[in-house]
Structures are given as C-alpha cells and as structure tokens.
Image 1 (tube, one colour):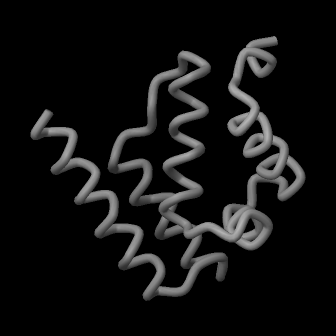
Image 2: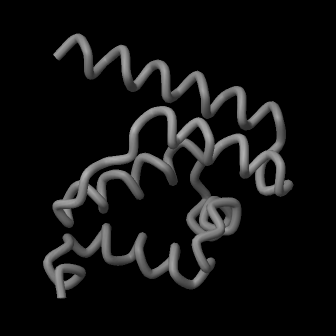
Image 3: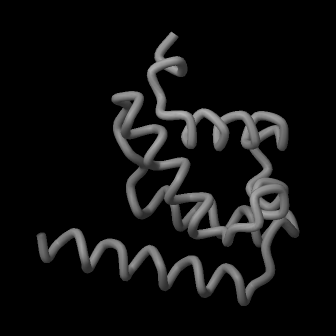
Length: 94
C-alpha cells in the first residue's frame, strides 16, 4: 500500500481524515487546524501518493459545498478562497 510510504505526520493526518469520514470540519476540530490547512495537508498527501493535485476550480467548488452543507461558515469560506488565491500567486512566482 502506498499509505505505508507516507511520513508519519501524513499518516496521522490520513487517519484523522478517515475517522472524520472525510468531513473537513471534523478534521479541523480534531487536529485544531484551519480549513485551508486541512485542504493543504490533504493536497500534500495526494501529491506524496503520486496522484494529480486538485485544480483551483475544484477546490473552490469544495469550499462552496462545505458552506452549503453547513460544514463551514461563509466567513470561513471567504478566508479559504483568499488562501487559494494566495497559494496560486506564490506558485506562479516560483
């Protein structure tokens, strides 16, 4: 299994993500981290496993779905969207 190749911190994150059944809001609470940090860690795991990262558009849709399902407040959604923009801007500068 590729999961065994993950560093221990990523394995712990995956475990928390699975226990939360993929509910990012629950992962936030369990690990005491923000929504954008959960998304970043999830993207890092996906990248480490060798799978293509999500596009920014998909991430925006996931944020909107989280707001719609009450997993995130509109204010948290705005902050998450801004973080996506900042991440894109930094990667374009590399």
